[in-house]
Image (cartoon, rainbow, N blue to C red; front, side, top):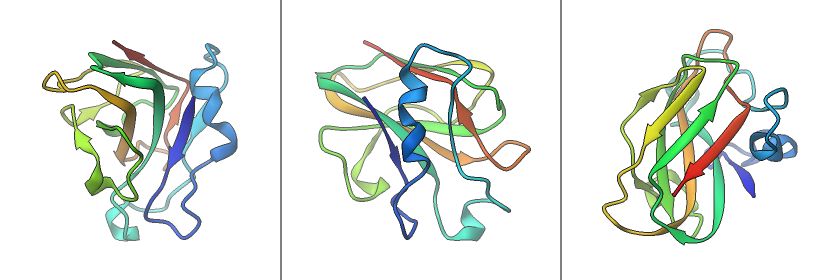
Length: 138
Protein backbone atom coordinates (compact mmCIF):
# COMPACT_ATOMS: atom_id res chain seq x y z
CA UNK A 1 0.00 0.00 0.00
CA UNK A 2 1.02 3.61 -0.53
CA UNK A 3 -0.24 6.79 1.14
CA UNK A 4 0.29 10.52 0.75
CA UNK A 5 2.00 12.56 3.48
CA UNK A 6 1.45 16.30 3.86
CA UNK A 7 1.61 17.09 7.58
CA UNK A 8 1.96 20.86 7.19
CA UNK A 9 -1.15 21.66 5.16
CA UNK A 10 -4.62 22.41 6.43
CA UNK A 11 -6.21 19.33 4.87
CA UNK A 12 -3.12 17.13 5.46
CA UNK A 13 -3.59 15.55 2.02
CA UNK A 14 -1.54 15.44 -1.20
CA UNK A 15 -3.40 13.73 -4.06
CA UNK A 16 -4.65 10.83 -1.89
CA UNK A 17 -6.84 9.45 -4.70
CA UNK A 18 -3.74 8.72 -6.83
CA UNK A 19 -1.38 7.06 -4.33
CA UNK A 20 -1.89 3.52 -5.66
CA UNK A 21 -0.74 4.69 -9.11
CA UNK A 22 2.82 4.74 -7.75
CA UNK A 23 2.77 1.02 -6.97
CA UNK A 24 0.58 -0.40 -9.74
CA UNK A 25 3.39 -1.46 -12.10
CA UNK A 26 2.13 0.92 -14.80
CA UNK A 27 4.51 3.71 -15.86
CA UNK A 28 1.68 5.65 -17.52
CA UNK A 29 -0.13 6.28 -14.21
CA UNK A 30 1.30 8.61 -11.56
CA UNK A 31 0.89 10.05 -8.11
CA UNK A 32 1.74 13.73 -8.25
CA UNK A 33 2.01 16.68 -5.96
CA UNK A 34 -0.24 19.67 -6.21
CA UNK A 35 1.14 22.53 -8.31
CA UNK A 36 3.02 24.98 -6.09
CA UNK A 37 3.99 28.56 -6.92
CA UNK A 38 7.37 29.17 -5.30
CA UNK A 39 9.37 26.88 -3.07
CA UNK A 40 8.00 24.95 -0.10
CA UNK A 41 9.84 27.07 2.46
CA UNK A 42 8.23 30.30 1.22
CA UNK A 43 4.88 28.53 1.61
CA UNK A 44 5.62 27.55 5.22
CA UNK A 45 6.18 23.85 4.64
CA UNK A 46 9.22 21.57 4.56
CA UNK A 47 7.92 19.29 1.82
CA UNK A 48 5.36 16.66 0.85
CA UNK A 49 5.69 12.97 0.24
CA UNK A 50 4.50 9.49 -0.48
CA UNK A 51 5.16 6.49 1.75
CA UNK A 52 4.90 2.76 1.26
CA UNK A 53 3.84 0.20 3.85
CA UNK A 54 6.12 -2.86 3.83
CA UNK A 55 3.45 -4.72 5.90
CA UNK A 56 6.09 -5.68 8.48
CA UNK A 57 9.39 -4.13 9.58
CA UNK A 58 12.20 -4.71 7.05
CA UNK A 59 15.70 -3.32 6.57
CA UNK A 60 15.22 -1.57 3.24
CA UNK A 61 18.28 -1.41 0.97
CA UNK A 62 17.04 0.88 -1.79
CA UNK A 63 14.10 2.83 -3.15
CA UNK A 64 13.69 2.69 -6.93
CA UNK A 65 11.75 5.59 -8.46
CA UNK A 66 10.47 6.21 -11.97
CA UNK A 67 9.29 9.76 -12.70
CA UNK A 68 8.12 11.76 -15.71
CA UNK A 69 9.23 14.95 -13.85
CA UNK A 70 12.97 14.55 -13.14
CA UNK A 71 14.82 17.25 -11.23
CA UNK A 72 12.99 17.26 -7.91
CA UNK A 73 14.91 16.78 -4.66
CA UNK A 74 13.89 13.99 -2.30
CA UNK A 75 15.14 12.06 0.72
CA UNK A 76 13.91 8.80 2.18
CA UNK A 77 12.74 8.54 5.78
CA UNK A 78 11.57 5.48 7.72
CA UNK A 79 9.38 4.73 10.76
CA UNK A 80 7.43 1.91 12.39
CA UNK A 81 4.37 4.07 13.04
CA UNK A 82 3.35 6.99 10.82
CA UNK A 83 4.41 10.12 12.74
CA UNK A 84 2.32 13.28 12.88
CA UNK A 85 5.19 15.36 11.45
CA UNK A 86 8.48 14.86 9.62
CA UNK A 87 10.52 15.20 12.84
CA UNK A 88 9.17 11.80 13.96
CA UNK A 89 10.72 9.94 10.99
CA UNK A 90 14.33 8.68 10.77
CA UNK A 91 16.28 9.87 7.72
CA UNK A 92 17.79 6.85 5.92
CA UNK A 93 19.17 8.39 2.70
CA UNK A 94 21.09 11.33 1.34
CA UNK A 95 19.24 14.19 -0.35
CA UNK A 96 18.92 13.18 -4.00
CA UNK A 97 18.15 15.15 -7.14
CA UNK A 98 15.90 12.59 -8.81
CA UNK A 99 16.53 11.42 -12.38
CA UNK A 100 13.89 9.80 -14.60
CA UNK A 101 14.93 6.37 -13.27
CA UNK A 102 16.49 6.79 -9.84
CA UNK A 103 17.87 4.37 -7.29
CA UNK A 104 18.21 5.84 -3.81
CA UNK A 105 20.48 3.82 -1.54
CA UNK A 106 19.21 3.44 2.03
CA UNK A 107 21.20 3.14 5.25
CA UNK A 108 18.91 1.89 8.02
CA UNK A 109 21.89 1.03 10.26
CA UNK A 110 20.50 -2.52 10.32
CA UNK A 111 17.24 -1.30 11.88
CA UNK A 112 13.96 -2.58 10.48
CA UNK A 113 11.12 -0.24 9.56
CA UNK A 114 7.60 -0.79 8.28
CA UNK A 115 7.04 2.57 6.53
CA UNK A 116 9.34 4.22 3.98
CA UNK A 117 8.64 7.83 2.97
CA UNK A 118 9.90 9.59 -0.15
CA UNK A 119 9.99 13.19 1.13
CA UNK A 120 10.09 15.79 -1.64
CA UNK A 121 11.74 19.05 -0.56
CA UNK A 122 12.27 20.88 -3.88
CA UNK A 123 10.20 20.76 -7.05
CA UNK A 124 11.40 20.58 -10.65
CA UNK A 125 10.47 23.04 -13.39
CA UNK A 126 6.72 23.00 -13.80
CA UNK A 127 6.12 23.42 -10.05
CA UNK A 128 4.97 19.84 -9.37
CA UNK A 129 6.56 16.41 -9.01
CA UNK A 130 5.18 13.04 -10.11
CA UNK A 131 6.10 9.46 -9.20
CA UNK A 132 5.10 6.80 -11.73
CA UNK A 133 6.56 3.87 -9.76
CA UNK A 134 8.05 3.52 -6.28
CA UNK A 135 9.59 0.20 -5.27
CA UNK A 136 11.18 -0.70 -1.93
CA UNK A 137 14.07 -3.14 -2.34
CA UNK A 138 14.78 -5.24 0.75
